[in-house]
Image (cartoon, rainbow, N blue to C red; front, side, top):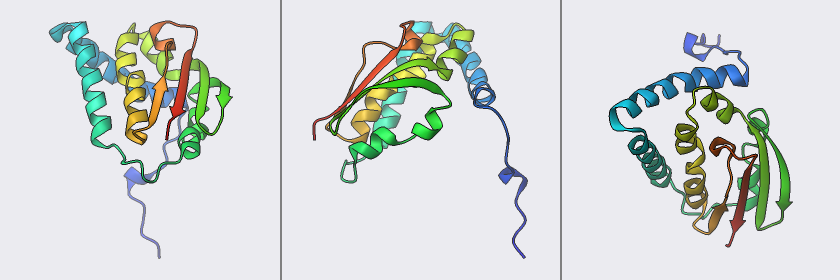
Length: 158
């Protein structure tokens, strides 16, 4: 007879938006409170620094890196969190234009897009470096910063 599932292992049914609200609303409120104590600019810099350091602490040495796998990872999950079009896709370049983002929607409701950028978007650059030393991200616009899109462009120079 199979072991009975612990209650922590039960399936929790929710929409992506409900899950985001559940995950981020408390975090945003907490960060807004920290901003009152530290100052908003100092908080933003601390979040960015911590995000970069955490990402790089778990960086890969690149030996098992596949550019194709990197650009495809998460696409099934992300399709319910963002709306995007592929601008360019080659064996060395992948560019996408994001026009809708659930992270932005939630952070914007709290007038906390700067905290959202520091928490969610800023780390994309470190994520690229952590995946492979010769992978870099170029991006000049984000929805979180009030632009009309996010223009992610990954270039693999390996």
